[in-house]
Image (cartoon, rainbow, N blue to C red; front, side, top):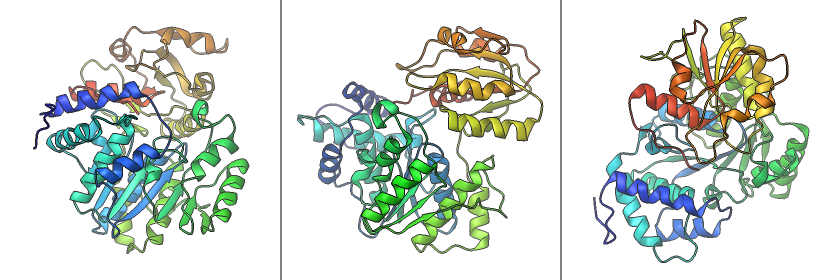
Length: 416
């Protein structure tokens, strides 16, 4: 690992510097990412195929299906996703294997030196993208899958020319950045469509569908709405909505000419893993629950899918709900959807600068809600004696905390 004259020599110091760039906030725009990728020589080689995935819900799961099936065909894959749950390394994977600590330190050392004198400093997300793409190039990835961080039009990932664009279901989220209506948000996300390149979309609400059709038509990009959920295969991810994501993934791979047959598709879909999506966890010491389910649902649309999964899995048995959230989320809307599957509410703090105080949640509940209590810590909520299955949800930050606690590892609180 080379060293910079600025002294970044190990993984923890490198990450400390990267996390310090959160001071620069979220900057939507492509000038910095394009310069960064150009000067760091991080653009994918022409022979590398790129699939770009945007949407409100299901982006990560769809990326996971694409990556797993492609890998089952023997294709060397690179996956860039966000946020991470426990460790930063989760964001960058080659053929399913996370980037190692030394490689992160080496790349961040070089990146820090590169951008030291820039007037407009790159953000956490922009630097992460450059790191990922350089890693994928060095490892000879044949297929790169990029998950947008937020939106699409000005998201850093849009600086990378894609061969196929994929749009998962679009709903309300990040309104302070993307717009107050479905149509406005859809316009931001549909901007990942590349002129004359294929685009595949999940079924969409009418305002989103109209916008997607309009953008695809303007850019002369062949558009297909993948209406039918995939049947006939066992999936590694739980929930009927995952069949829509799996169908979308296969269409994207087929469009690139990646050879698919029954056995590779069966293997890839069946082995797909994506933590925090209705994930069953074996309760460990200090967790007094019969079952523990983790789900990163953080908007009403994803909460609806979560509630449907719960009923399908547990029937009439209700949850001991452990809930935390960050600012700018529709907490009232999420809770209204989850209340019918809830027997007991536990509001907990989230380890994030954007966390909402758990004391505020009770005021959002209707009068006939289940019993609710505010917990001083996540640990105290998990230690509550309950025979009911526990459901932890509301934020990727919170799910990451639980996983770190169970693994006995340090938690790299996710940033962007």
